[in-house]
Structures are given as structure tokens and as C-alpha cells.
Length: 380
Image (tube, rainbow, N blue to C red; front, side):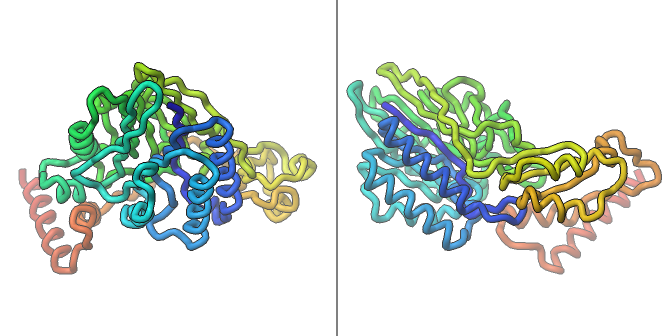
């Protein structure tokens, strides 16, 4: 069975305030073309379909058009889950009128994790689609207050999924998580707040023949060759300039062994960091790429960014090399370092758990309690 694995489309996203609609359209076209050219049996999209819970109308139309093309131009089934950027209810709404023999679209977390079961010449393949959920939602879903971390949540989902696996079926898990040992990027939103441990152990996926992951934006295997992030189709930060973007074509053999072929994306606009003197960069070949410029000039250049944008209209950042210092080399002597207010930290935690901010009265109670603790520590 052939599976085309992608994730983290982030439709509706901007790069430094510049809309990525046309860039996203280009990669969606490439995904459809790959499904057709490689005769993929299943298209997997492992979360973060949209960049935010309430995406712009243009992003919704873009996804609708893309899924319509997959349905009409290919024979592939679709397995898609909500990620931490998505609204689970919005993603679930797309499943209401779909052909359940050909699609598994999962939004909110569920205690009834039934797979999409497809068959090839070697027998059945079960796809379990496990959408992202915060701990408080998982506690309500599973009626289990002991769920305290993403590891706990995913373990509960996998336990439910295992109960519905057909005998002898090869098993593909689709999940949105940060697996320990993987390499992240600056543009990923943390999966926990207030200092929680967001990683999950790769051993949690024991028994799965392939694990199609979303959340991290760099293509990579983690823990084992069959546990894999496809990565995001586009670079969303300058820390990803060294990252070749791709989708993963996975082939499962009769024994469930997965072989992976990396299919590169060709972005409409690349993300680059350019170094040099201002006058030299003005002579470079014009480009619409997103660029960060590090000038090696000894003195500031008048209207440096304005003039650079005549050559690089999507220049986003400009810095001088001689002004850049590694943070660890900066002296803290004579400076006050900002420290988070404990009341704010507690308020963030409670908002995360109960989805409601601290009232003025509650803030006063928390501040008073912390004050008493501080006085006690001083006395001791």
C-alpha cells in the first residue's frame, strides 16, 4: 500500500506579515500531482491544516478546493486530523458528508478511536487518526483526572485505538505530537504551557507499522525509521533556511515493513539569509524570496532596507554583523533581568486548565498566599 504523508499546511499563515496564499496554493498543487503520479492509495495530513482556529475565508476555500481535487482527480483515500493550531470542531465539520469508506477526518478527541480499514493484495491496513488534544479535554473525554501530559493523552488514545484493530491488520497511526529526540524549529507553538513536559516517548507507538506525525516542521525520523515527521511544506522562519522541505511516500509491504521515498517540494519563494556589504547586495539578481540580510558594512547605511527592497521586495529583516553578539556573551552586570510574575504564571495555568482567566478577587487571593509563603521563607 502506498501512503503519501504530509502535515502542517498552516493555510492562512503569513511570513513576517506577507500573505502565503500563493505559496500554499503551489504546494497543494504539488501534493495532488504527487498523489496522481505515484498512484498513492492514501493521502495523510497529520494536523495543523490551518494556521489558527479561526482561519480566513480564503484559507477555508483553498482547503475545500484542494480536497475536491483529491476526491475528483484521484482514487486516494484521505486521513486527516486536527493539530494544535486547528479548531477540532471545524475539522470535524468536514467529515459529515464524506464517504466514510474513503475518508477518515478527525477533529475533537474521542474515546471511540475506530480506524479506517483499507485493503491491498496482502490484506487489511488499519489507519488510526488521533487528533491533538490538551490534557483538560482528554480528562473530560476519558473521565480520567490522572491525565497530566501529552504522553498521557496519546497513551489513552492509542489504548482506545488498539481495541478496534482487526486481527492481522497492518497498523498506521496518524498523530500530532512532539516525540522525544526530534529536532524542532522556532516557528512551532508549544504543546503545553507553564513549564509542562510536551514530549512523548517513541516507545508509545509499539505495534504500529508506520507512524505519520505532524507538528514539527523539519522532515525526520525519530526513534525508529518508521516513526516519521513529513515536515511542513513551507519554511516559516529563518532558522529553516537549511531545511529541504518534502513529503514522504511510504510503501508498506506484506509484512508491514515501511520504505520511505522523500519527494521534494519546490516552493514558489524560498527563505534565505544573505551576508555582504550593502553595495554588493544591491548588485545581486532580483528575487521575490523571503530574505534576512546581514550587512558587513562597518557603519550604518542610509535607507538600507528601503534600497534593498528594490532588489528583494520581500526582505524581512536587516542586521549588521558587527552588532550581533551571542546572548551568552552579553554581560548582565548592572542590568535587571525580567522575571515572570508568579501570579501571572498561576493565572496562565488556570486559564489553560479551566479556559477562564483569574478574576480580580482570585488574583488578590493568589497574591496574598504567595506573599505569606515569601514571608515564611524569609523567617526560616
